[in-house]
Image (cartoon, rainbow, N blue to C red):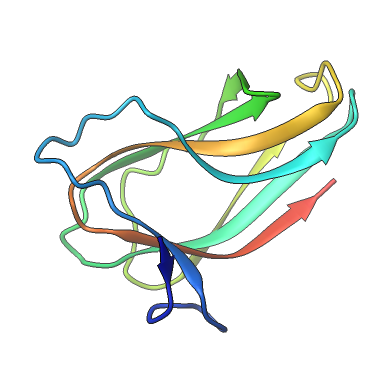
Length: 124
């Protein structure tokens, strides 16, 4: 969902809410992607904040190349501040075995408090 109220600098931001009574999910959410050449490296960065200090759970980031998991990425986010904080993830050319779409996806294992994501950056 797009969040027009909570944003870092300019609206909108992306809000993610997991609406279940359990904090368990195995369904990845594609957060950002880019086209990439085989053997290239990439860095994805974004600002993230929790909507409430009672946010609990984890976001497990994964790199996917053309829809296939290339690598589960660290750090797994197990606590999020209520203020905007920048996070970034790198992948090396070794993991990029073919040209195509490289995406960063989160497996959200979290309670029902939403998180907001803003100001995406891709560096190839």
